[in-house]
Image (tube, rainbow, N blue to C red; front, side, top):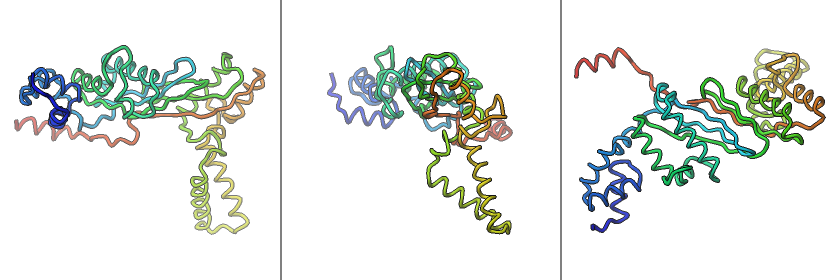
Length: 302
């Protein structure tokens, strides 16, 4: 049997883009022959999977789920909407999110070293195999884990996902959890950035006030009037970006903060929104714009 070194494995990995363990197994099977190992990887579809890594993956699913007092919201991307709706991809998403919940991990890089729940595979190997099987580039883009009294909500087939953490002394109360669900719906629908005005970073607040002040100055308002206008515009800013200051989507005669207070009073308890995370699928990813006419023309030339 050939003596296979770590350098041999690394070189094969650099050539094919396949996982380290897949490369090691292929070299063992090929008795150290690199060309034969490449052939083995190609036959298994793994080298083909590596070629897909450069493709843009902006479709997929945002998965939000809880298990007891832990929860996760994760974005897992693929290339096409067709793939995102397939049973194979959705099953993979379920396994990935369960693995996140089962391990103490904070980012996708750390997750790659974890063993996938219910298997003997590392996540890096598992993902490579799924890319080869499904036939599209797949990325575990981001996730956030939380612990406490949590409510998860997904919208539009996983286009949006939200996880809300409550601080309450009645965590098992059905009405309190229903309140949490409504808060999650609010965050998902209106995209609040902060819980309250107190949680807005000082630099964000200072920048917004500076912008509004300059705008008022450009409008030529008197100094005594300008200050009040800026105050009014800052209130409007808080209503747009702060969850508790937003108008409640089910009753716009009250703010979200007032709605929560009404549930507190009715249930005789304390309910505070500790934090929330909202992901939208593909946000910040520059999608490829297909030119269908050019694509057809190119096909005709082949």
